[in-house]
Length: 163
Image (cartoon, rainbow, N blue to C red; front, side):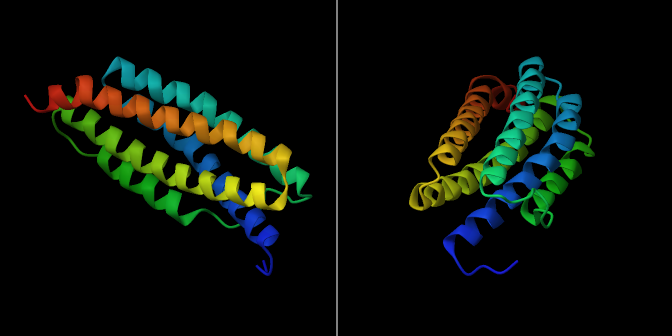
């Protein structure tokens, strides 16, 4: 893909986020299964449902740009998921492993927040009002998930892991 205009870059980044979301759809059930804390498990399951909607929104935004969802695999998400997978193969204290799952999940959330922030800026500059509204919904959900993970970590899981 040639990146000669901001519109080209916008589509490129949308496709990258789509790839990231599709990879996350496969990883979240594994994370939920690995979690021992009931609230963490439920959080991963809830975010799985949100992630399905995130992918559907990206399909709509790309369709509005007359672009397909096909693109290269998001290597950053692939790496973040691989790190999380490695952690899930470790043995140890369940609370410590849950704390590690939160770390892995927040790395993913921060990557997504950065990506969605960029495409929101591009959408605004390019006058893609419909795309911007959909992307804002997603970034708000990603930020909310990150806050929920922080609250769970600081109020329960990290405290249990430190005992």
